[in-house]
Image (tube, rainbow over all chains, first blue to last red):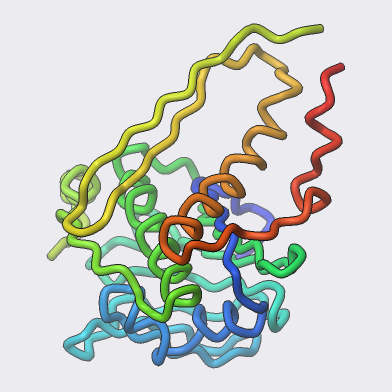
Amino acid sequence: MKIEQFKPAIVYTIYIAATPEQVWKALTTAEFSRKYFSGFAIDADLKVGGAFIARAPDGSEHISGEVIECDPLKRLTVTWNVNWPALVEKLGPTLVTYEIEQAGDTVKLTMLQSHDRDISDDILSGGRAGWPAILSSLKSLLETGQALTIKMAPPERMLAALKEMGIGTP
Amino acid sequence: MREPATKVAFTIEPYGNLVKLTVTHEGFIEGSKLVGAISTGWPAILSGLKSVLETGKPLAIPRAALGKEELTRS
C-alpha cells in the first residue's frame, strides 16, 4: 500500500480544551472510545504494523485495521476497514489520520479520511455525518466528563450506495 | 481586490437533547484568497461556541494557531 496515493476525502477539525495526552488516550483506548463512539471499543497496538481494531458492543470486529504511522501525541494513521463483505475489495482501503497540535491551552484535532481512488458523495455521506458526531462527543467527554448521546438514523444514503455496488451491509 | 460578498447558512436541527449545527459558506470566487483562512476559522469559532454552551467557558485558541495574518485583505 502506497500511502502517498491516498487523498483526503473528508477533513474535520475540532478544538478541545484538553492536553495532547488526553486526546491521544481518548482516540486510542477502549476506556474512552466506548463512551463517545457508540459503544465501540478501540484496541490499538500503537506501533507501525500493529493491529487497530474497533469492536462493536456485541464483541464483533467492526473495523479491522493496521497502524500505518504512529508519532505518539502528534499523529496516528490507520487503515479503517469496515468488515462488510466485499467493502475493501470494491472501495479499496480507507485511511484515517488523526493530527494533534497544541494550540495554547487547547488542542487542535484534525481527522482526515483518505482513499486511493474517487469515492462517490453517496458513500462519503456516511463519514460526513458520522465524524462530526463522534468527534463532537469526544470533545464533550473531555471537557465536561460526559459524552453525547446522539440518536442517529442509519446512514441510508451510504447503505443504499454500498448495496448497489454489491457490498454487504447490515 | 475586494472579493464579492459570500453567503453563510446556519442550520439547526434538534437531535434528542442535542442540537446538530451545520454551517455552509458558499459563493467564493475562483482563486479566492479568503476561502482558506475562512476554512481555518470556522472550526475554531464553532468549537468555541460548543465549549461556551456546554461548559460556560470560552476556548483560549491563540490567534497564531489560526494563521490570522492570512485574513488581511490584499
